[in-house]
Image (spheres, helix red, strand yellow):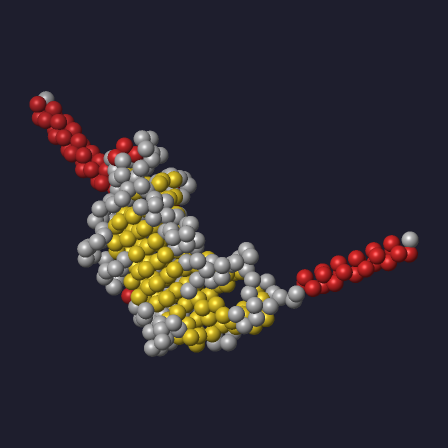
Length: 375
């Protein structure tokens, strides 16, 4: 009887031990979930998280449909990951609209990064509408904004970073390691979009879109953005890590009433094998014949890689809303010591419909006068 009781006791202990081990493993992978800001809506308030936030240092964050305003002045020296969880409902949104300075230490500010190939995170959105996102002073580590960046074996990861605000805001600035900067959908089958609009100001070491595989878009809207980088790479160049190249990379420009913004790269800009260009004419756009729009200034020399976007070789034309633009990669760079620029020149403008309407109006007025005289 004692032996049987002892065996039962051993089994209970073994089961309890296994339960503790499994529970520990599950807790280790449990996301610290945003509860909706029960206290003050602030990212750094512990009471706003199920596990007692804030969240830094590569922790997995679950934001099921949450809208969060980041008001902290400093997030420490660790990585900050914003991950959408497709199993938790709506995609998360992080709004950064502080008018102060949002300072990141060495690490990564990541939107919908997949921390593990076994966990499929997607759909995260960051809206950056004010303040400054910058690398911590004196920090020697790299610092990146990664949009839909994931491990090479992961799939279906997506993310969007929207940047734009009022005059003078927002701003991204790093003065540091050459590998710091902005990366969009640079691996796997990720889909990432980085939208630059409003009065955005960007000064960074690199902008890389779809470097090793993925579907990445870098979109610039309007003519009031300031974008400066040391290196810019659009699409894969072949022969890179894992033998992967970009599945799709798009540089998208929208010209509106304020014109179009120029991206200035200190080193020669690389254009990969599957890089595309997309042009949109926004609200209020107006241009005159022979007007030139400089979209990318490759200050150190000619464009490398393929040297041109797919289907848009030197002298190709684009027609939009009655306008015809001729593309050239041989435009004049602001760098007087060399360099070339990707430009669009207006070679045809819409027919002046206003003249026809004016002539019709004058005819109607003259007809009215004759009728009154005859009467």
